[in-house]
Length: 586
View 1 (tube, rainbow, N blue to C red):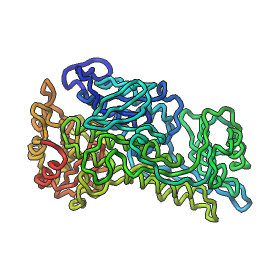
View 2: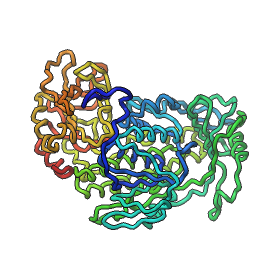
View 3: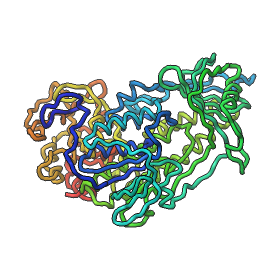
View 4: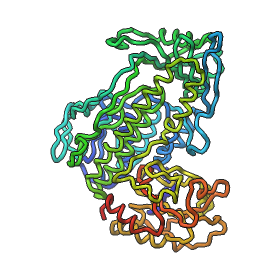
């Protein structure tokens, strides 16, 4: 990370100087301190000129989290927030997954063992960590941000009045704001105020979940394991952080069409007994139940994620995110991950509009992009839940289903359709490994200035800037590109304040000759930023790994939320300007 740009400052470099502002008007009100709410709050807290408030009906931070799976794509996002290393240090790392099915005698036996994440899918791991700890990391980020943002607990939303501004009615009084974002869960008060229904259906199946400390003779208790018995149901084992705790998802019973899971009066003893029946002949001796719940499998999603319906040209003022607009079963571990991606998508758009970088019409793209992703999730979750509960003649059936959808569960298959922020694939052949509309897939490089081996994707931090990666072909266009992006830089601002240009050469770093004059000067002291130039890592050349045309080169434009917006030849800078002019104000 870079610091000392505006003068030497001792102490913790992640502790930002407190913003010198007297602004009291609220720009953004976030309702709910779940994963979506805290992702959005942590993002917006970094901008001293945006006044953000976050309210929560509970009396304090979450202590016992329900969600725990953190996908590779989410870890890539955490890297942008500079908390990935904290998560990795505490988390359980999911390295392999095993599959158990009944043999000819009906006894369960291991029928498969595979890598949980395929090689090369991401530089980040799939990990398990309590949702409460993820919240802790976000809350710490907020406290160290320029705005020193803290949630207002014991505050419940009771209604909304939407006009030129929004009035949020709460149990602690009215709050006037430009925008309201409901991140307040499946029973969202914001969604209720907007009269937007969740639509979908239940699967009429009861499942239990419990975090336990136990002893057992089952050999794969510290591996992610999918177990399908002959006639006692299915079970998913998710080892937890800390080396001892483990989570069980347990199939309990089919429900009648008019029956609710609460009608069964299920207890922890029912869950333990069901787990032992499925695991037989292995024995599970539960010493402590840390947390447990029962739930019905169901998939529901809203038709819109904002107060304006599709086709309405009025810029939206109120949004919903996370469980407020999509709910599903927890076994595939997608809920927390997709919710946080909702917030990352919306955060940079709100910031761009509030700071005057983009027209408010940009905000329509949130609902347009994320509603489609949520519907894909609902469809996937329905198929995944049914496949896991199915017990057929093929013991490899669920393993095959798991492997087929591994990229989806890792979070890397999201692809935004062509639209205002996603360009045509006319020049996709210049960078085949950077699919337009998908996340920027990191790869190793060597930073020229200090010969530091690193991941190129880790230069994309959660700071609201666009990234322009200039992969140099036979002709270096860096100087011309510097002039091109200057048109979007406000007077007196750092040259990379809106678009951060990074150049990747084909020559080895020891053979590359340049001087400090090519690097931009920044900050109050006009210091040179020498971390803009990169060379291939000979162990995994990025030009080969990501299919970059070596003769022509490629420009890869990346949105602030790490998704590829456009691929162009470096010579077509007019096309770059035409594209950016549709998005950014000059």
